[in-house]
Length: 78
Image (cartoon, rainbow, N blue to C red; front, top):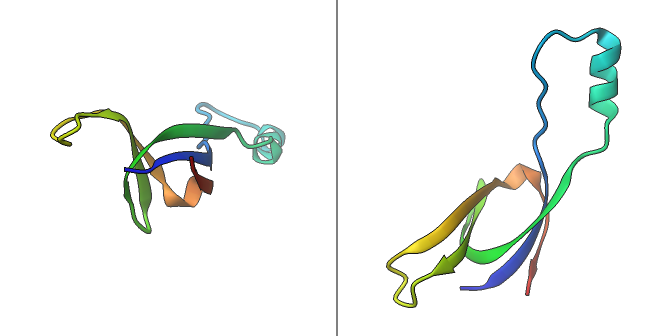
């Protein structure tokens, strides 16, 4: 499996009641950009799936992370 670094924009949410001004400020806030490093388990048009460890026979995988494709800025092979 390839080791990759995925740069992606995190989804942000806010609960409760908001004034129009608060919503406008929320919309214009800077995005949270995240970098995840892992082994590329799967990639398709909808998602990228990373694992951080696996048995050499690929019978078990540790720490799975699924990132929606629409959030991905770039993927670099390490």
